[in-house]
Amino acid sequence: MAASARRGPYICGVDAAMDVVSGKWKSLILWELHNYGTRRFAELRRGLPGVSEKMLVQHLREMEEDGLVHREVYPQVPPKVEYSLTEHGVSLNAALAALGEWGAERMRRIGAEKVVVGTVGAAVPVRR
Amino acid sequence: MAASARRGPYICGVDAAMDVVSGKWKSLILWELHNYGTRRFAELRRGLPGVSEKMLVQHLREMEEDGLVHREVYPQVPPKVEYSLTEHGVSLNAALAALGEWGAERMRRIGAEKVVVGTVGAAVPVRR
DNA sequence: TGCCGTACTCACCTGGAGGTGAGTACCCCA
DNA sequence: TGGGGTACTCACCTCCAGGTGAGTACGGCA
Image (tube, rainbow over all chains, first blue to last red; front, side, top):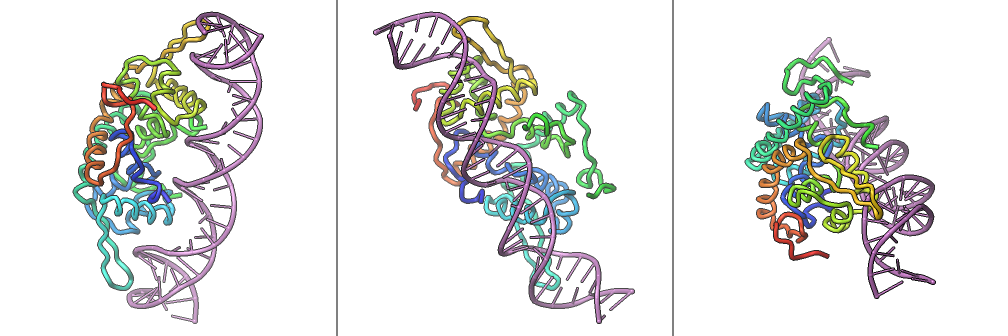
């Protein structure tokens, strides 16, 4: 798994940061947690249309290992687990903001369509 | 190839930017071109220890398509091709700077070793 | 009585990112 | 005379990120 191959020797800071963010859904998880503060597993799954449960678990575990997210388990039935950003997760998000700006401008340049999900916009019509 | 699957619908700006930077060597190519201004193909290959020629060509082509790098061919023998950053490449690099800072601090936190290459330091003593 | 929801784990499979090694056309230098 | 350097292309291969679908223990609800 990525967790074992990671923490390898990095070439520069960008390299080290990319290692932590690389993963199809990680930046989206970061956004989601940033926007809502705290989210339960099923809420994240619904907020990220297309993600498989396996990948969501895997990415969340890796991000927890990396100290980006905090995992709070409530010992009750049915199970309840809440995820939130740690201090490092918040600062990473801040560092990603500049990249997000650049990406948004690129989308404007190339005229890429933006898929509407329940992340920022609240309305969630699309589900596949 | 990535070039065909790209420009897909993006979920947010970070997503769009990551699409352009994702690729094992792209951020390093960006750094290399940023630090040296202009580099020939073989110089890049030597500056990025471990990169395969195929991947270097492929990534450079994709980055050219994305408007990040400029490719200047001198019609002479032996062939000479010079790569440099475009305006968009420069601004992307600036956006990556914050991420680089974060990554550098993460490396300090986890005590990751940093492989020394002639990339960041301006002074370029080491080359393998 | 049986289906839904919660938060997972496990086994299996596929596609594509990335690596390897050879080939090319030409010139320079020892 | 031939070996190395230039900037590639092409065919082939490996490996793993990520997807699919099933299973689990338990409670609530119709």
